[in-house]
Image (cartoon, rainbow, N blue to C red; front, side, top):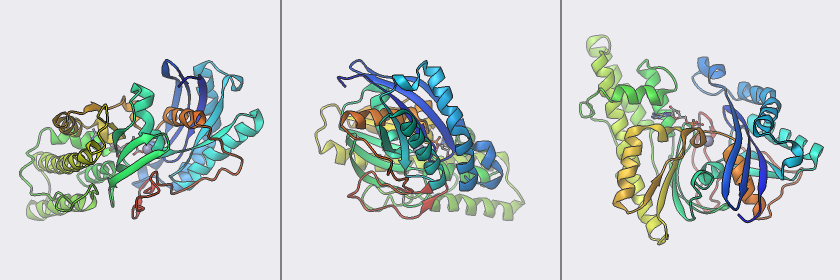
Length: 364
Ligand code: KG4
Ligand code: ZN
């Protein structure tokens, strides 16, 4: 980027209230501050994010998060070029809270306002962290999202496929719950899986027999539930070994599905002859060692580089929103006071909408 931009970003589309200041210039991008207030404790007793509770907590935390982000970055409103905010997709109460807060800042300071697609924030993170060149292949795997994207520009995405039901993180969380492991389930299941025998239970690899890059994880979770119930009926409970073997079987099934679908997505991406082939991941599930290992293997077989940004920028945060805002600002994008909060907002307008709605809101 040949100009230097300092952008305030706001994120409140799910269960993290976040504000950040990012500076982007000819030398690259720098995260000057990134404040994230998680809401896990507020939703713990409910088995998922409660939209009303989330929206209220965002409304309460946004202004202090903005103040903290400015303070930590050592900047004031006068030093900013624009305010960028997640305008969707997500839980509408939370998105509205963020959009209203950003509109208030824009009205009070005269700063330009930019509405950012939350998924574009994730998808552009490899450019924020590593200056990745377009086009690259992105696998977004979190508790709320799962999709393959070819990222060609700040507003140019092709969605190659995604989950038709649960996101992988959601499946890890549900499997943890049904095996009595703590939340968030991903790290707990991964830890158990390391001790288990992945071949003991014959668990399905959903949609592997169908062409394309779409995935499904809900049936796999149900298969774990059935295997658990069969063991309980047989001997009255689960041993440590049963639990570890179920975790290992489940995780290996997720790895197999993600690896095969990544191979297919990679083949489609390589058809475009990218000059610097790259596959990048984002989302909390990218923390899983077995999944990362499998993706690294697929990318090296296809002579592509593999990039996993630091976890704090892979999971929901506002630095990615500020950065995406900077890219859009440089393209001349400005929004007015009529900027709408959108519960659904597919990145790729040409691909069919995903079915259903995840625990963290509508699937885009
Ligand atoms: O991106 P993220 O922080 O939040 C949203 O989904 O919004 O991702 C959280 C998800 C949770 O479902 C969590 O269980 C999963 O990422 N996760 C993992 C691991 N660490 C976190 N899943 C598998 N293995 C892990 N090590
Ligand atoms: Zn997200």
